Image 1 (cartoon, rainbow, N blue to C red):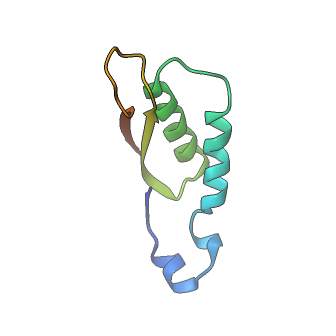
Image 2 (image 1 turned 180 degrees about the vertical axis):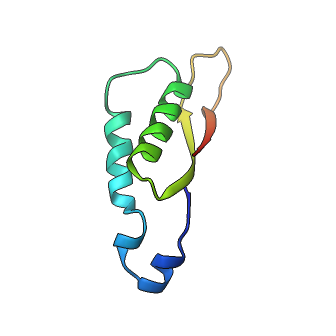
Image 3 (image 1 turned 60 degrees about the vertical axis):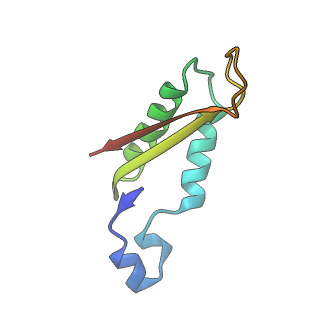
Length: 86
């Protein structure tokens, strides 16, 4: 997440930044919500929700890893990384 942290750095007040526990809860709700077929869709849904909920955030990068993808090759997982900005 990219945002101006100068105010929070001065005030030491969570009200001047993003509450990461709230972001975690938002992401968890999306991940545990209705299933999607593509991790690209999941990453886009997360990015859209974060930017839509927290206007203080200027840009967000979301990485989603699918462990054990359905390939005939052994992988630790496949990851997509998606960046969205205002």
